[in-house]
Image 1 (tube, one colour):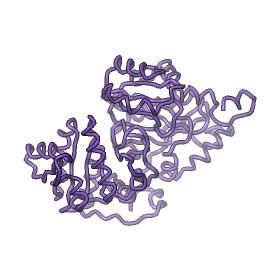
Image 2 (cartoon, helix red, strand yellow):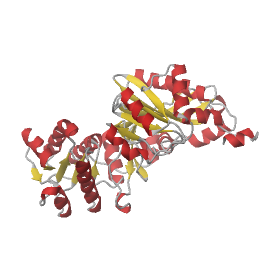
Image 3 (cartoon, one colour):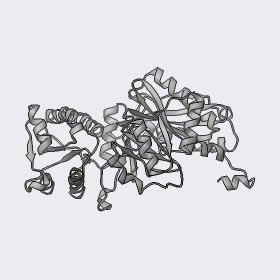
Image 4 (cartoon, one colour):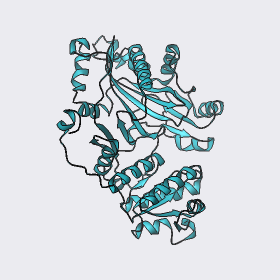
Amino acid sequence: MAEIDDLGVPILGTAPGGIDLAEDRHRFDRLLSELGVPRPPGRVACSPEQVLAAAGELGYPVIVRPSYVLGGRGMAVLHESDDFGRLAGAVDWDRPVWVDRFIAGRELEVDALADGEGVLVLGIMEHVEAAGVHSGDSLLVYPARRLDAGGRERLVELTTRLSLALGVRGLVNIQCVLTDGELLVLEANPRASRTVPILAKVLGFPAVRAATRLALGSTLAQLGLSPGLYPEPAHVAVKAPVFSWAKLPGVDSVVGPEMKSTGEVLGLDWQFAGALVRALEASGLRLPTNGGTVAFSLAERDKGRGVELARGYAEEGLQLAATAGTAAALRRAGLPVRAYRKLREGSPNLIDGLVGREVDLVVNTLTRGAEASRDGHRIRRAAVEQGVPCLTALDTADAVLEAIRTRQAGTAFPVRALQDYLEGAPR
């Protein structure tokens, strides 16, 4: 694009200089510093050795973000220096990478329209999973559920300042993390994001048409639009990712900074729980019913929260099963659980349980260490091959539990046309 620009060929929309400013992680961080926009502390690195040095200065965990990538290619969260081996071969070291402190807060993203002078925020969306799961692989809720009016105003203000500084003409997507009440900007993408079709349908707003007009030189005012936050609807939308694990032999089904989903579906309802159930079921995830079995295999760091999550599943009439270490934690909490042996100890282990159709849902979080990692991968692949849903983030498992509660409460989910939602409040 820069070469075309140098030849004097007109480029519509955001100028190449603005795109480079957003995509080059080092330049983007300098821009945030100049604007006084809060962001996680970070360092530029041009080699594997510099990545490790930056991680040592910042303190683990850190996230590595290459420049000019789509789908989070080459991104990784490093919890310790030993994690670096799986990243080094995936990064193009011809370009600098950005290493910043990983903050597992609540992730928010914004889609907006800009004309170079004003900015209209089409919507503020909230991820169900904490930061660290790629936006394409997360459950997404619109309007954001847990952001107050002050947070909305702050995010609109940050989006406006950043979009104008980048010279955006058309669409822009900005991703942030909310931690301890502070909004930190992670990245800006001066283009249409995968969430634009979602907002366009949910709002009944022709976002792409408007963006094209802006790229051709129109202003927001000429399109009858005003800067600020577009009015939020009465209904709720939940986007759920769709994965093709069964068609990709050997691929690990754990989610992380690199995008792995191959599609997405949308659930609409007047309430969050209803939209969530619709989205999960449309994505192909079969919700276990009363009497079904949920098997847990949790990393040590997740066992405290995992115990309470398991208690919630048990209260909904589901049977609990677990691998040996997790089963011990559940028993200490007074929960009845069927214990499976570790894989190296032979049968009956969790893979036997999956093959024998004894398990309806698996909750498995990533463990570190070669042997633990191999066992986790084998369990996740066995779940895929047996057609059993396998959740690798506790936030996702928590959302699935909420969906199960809603289903088992006998809530009706009548079919409605999209127009029924766009007409206003429920009737």
